[in-house]
Each structure stands twice: as structure tokens, then as C-alpha cells.
Length: 111
Image (cartoon, rainbow, N blue to C red; front, side, top):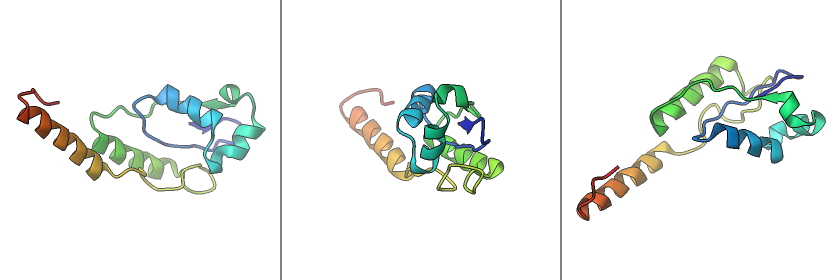
């Protein structure tokens, strides 16, 4: 997500990028708030660009971290606070694995 007038960039991952873009414009994170308020309407001043598509949560988190570093979006030129995903992918993968075990135990096919 790029603020066209300032050139500042935010890199994030989502399964629904267009929806997430709308959410950021409606309720911007703290580092993005002033630019969203200053440059209205937001859809005319911010652009959404799909950088990569990934097949798993873990792959998306690795790509997100790589793009944050490549585009240098944690400093004054960007909106990212962290240098990588804020989520704990280990917990998500454990939840997915646990769900599969439950389905298999009940005779389901799994995910």
C-alpha cells in the first residue's frame, strides 16, 4: 500500500487484500493515520499493489519480511513498525495441524 503523494509504503499480508486496503483507509494504523487524514479521499491518494501470491501462511510471512527489507518500509520512508509479520505462524500451523488430527479421528479427510 503506497501513499502516492509522499511515496511512503506499507507492506502486509492478507487473504483478502482489497478488504484489508479498505480497512486501512477507514481505520489507519498509527504511523499511517496522518497521511490518510491529510490525503483525502484515500482511494485517490493511496494505491494497492499485489507484490506476491503465496501458498501458505509461513511462505506469506517470509515474503512479507523480504519485501519489508527490500522496500525499506520500517524507517521514515515507510509505515511498517516491525521488520516482519506480527503473527506467530507456529501457533497458526499448530492450530491447523490440530484441526486435521480432529477431522481424521472422526473419519474426515482432513484439510
